Image 1: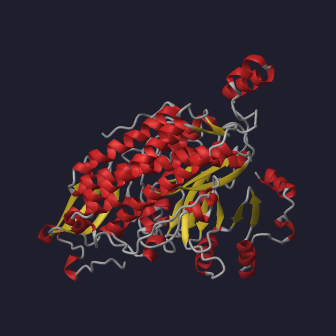
Image 2: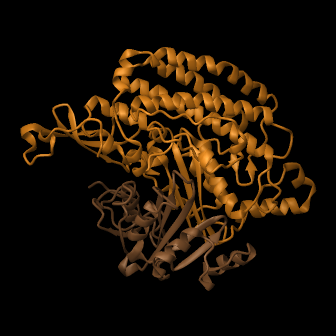
Length: 179
Length: 405
C-alpha cells in the first residue's frame, strides 16, 4: 500500500513526509500543535490523507473543527476498511472532513489492530458520527469507546460476525433464521 | 437541542410508561415511511417524546457485493441503491473509478451526463413531491407528478433502454450516444415543464391546509443541521448555502448558470420550497446543456478500459483483444483511495473506493444522503405531533434502498 503512494508522490513532484515537510496545511498545523499527531501524510489524486494515532483522534477532530484556518464543521463520512485477517494492523477507519465555509476536504485515517480494535468516538464532536460509527461497528466490529448508543444498525441484533470483514463469506455462514 | 417546540418537563420519559406514556411501533409496513422503516415512538398523548428509527430491513449487503465484482459490474449495483436517482449514483461511482484511473472524459459525454443528472433530479423531486403531498393528505398532486415523471423516464429509456435502472454512465463515458431526435424530445419536455410546475404550485403551495401542516413543523437550525450532517435540500431549507455542484464542482458544473435556492425558515415548508425552486434551476441547467451539445465522441480514448466500437471489433485485431480482456478479466485499477462527492437529488452522495490493484475494488462505501438525513430524525421529531412525523419524514426525502444498502 505504501509503495505505490510514495511513487505517485514522486511523479507529482510533491515533497514526501520523509523529510518532515508536509505540503498539506492541515498536516502542518497538526504537527505544529503536537508532533506526535501526524504519523504519515499521503498526497495522491488531489486528496490529502493524514494517518493519525488512534489515541489522539478525538483531540485532532476537535481541533480541526474549531481551528479558524480550517473550520471542518461537517463530517461528510466515516467508514471502515478491512485489510484482511493476515494483515497487521488490520483495520482502517477513515474520517472524511469537510468545511461548509471553506469548502475543502481532508481524510483522517486511524489504523487498528485486530485484537484491540478500539478507537475513541467522535460523536461528541459531530453528532452525525453516531450512525456512521454504529455502521462501522456493525460491519467491521470496530468498537468506538464513549459512543452513546453503540448497537448494530443494519444487521439484526443477534447477528453473528461482522459482514464486511474479508474473512466473512459473501453468502454468510448459514441462512439467517428468525427463530 | 434547540427545537422550536420546547418540551415541558412533564413530557420527559418516565419509568411507569403506562401511566401517561405509550410506546408504539410505526412501520415497518407503513405507507408513509417510504419503504420499510420502523420508528419506535414514545408518545405522551399525541406528542412525540422520543422517536428512534430502526433501519436495516432492506439491507442486502451491496457494499460487500462490490468487493466480489469487477469495477464495471459495480455500476448496476449502484442503480439499486437510491432507486429514484439511479443516474446520480451511476455518476458518483463512475467518477470515483475514473479518478482512480485518471482518465479524462470527452466534453460531449460530460454535457450529456449533466443533462441526464438534472432530468433525474427533477424526476426524483417529482416523486418526493407526489408522495409528500400524499402523506399530508393531498392525493391529486401525486397523479400530476407521476404524469410528468413518466415523460422523464421515457427520455431515460430512449437513451439507455432502462427506466428505473439505466446504468447509462460507464467508466470512461457513456454506454452509447443519445439516439437521433433525442434533442427534440428533451426540448418538448422543457417547453411543457414550467407549466407543470405552475400547476403544482396552484395545487398545494397556496393551499392553507398544506401550509398549516408544514409551516413551523420539523424545525432544525442551521447549526444543528450541519452538526447532524444534513445535506442537499434538507440543509438548504435551514438557510445554509451549500451545494457540492458549487463547492467542489465536477462535470464542469462551474460553467453553468444556476442559482442555489435557500430558505431561512428551517421547517418542512422551507424544505418544500427549496425543492420546488430547485426543479426550476434544474430546468435551466438542462436547457443550457442542450444548447451546448456538439458532435463528438462520448467515450474516453482509453482502449484498456472502455469497450471498443462494434465496427472496430470487426476490423481491428487489437480492438477485439481489448474487448475480450475487459469483459473476461476486467481492467486493473492502480492502488489508491478516493472519496468522490456529488450533489445528488437528496444531498451529498459520496463514494469511497479503495483499490489495492487488480480488477476488483478492495472496498466501496456509499455515503448516502438519506442515511445521514434520517439520523437527524430523533432531533426533528421531538415534541412534534404524531401526524407531523409523516410530514417530517417526507420533508427529509429518504429512500430506504440507499439507507440500508
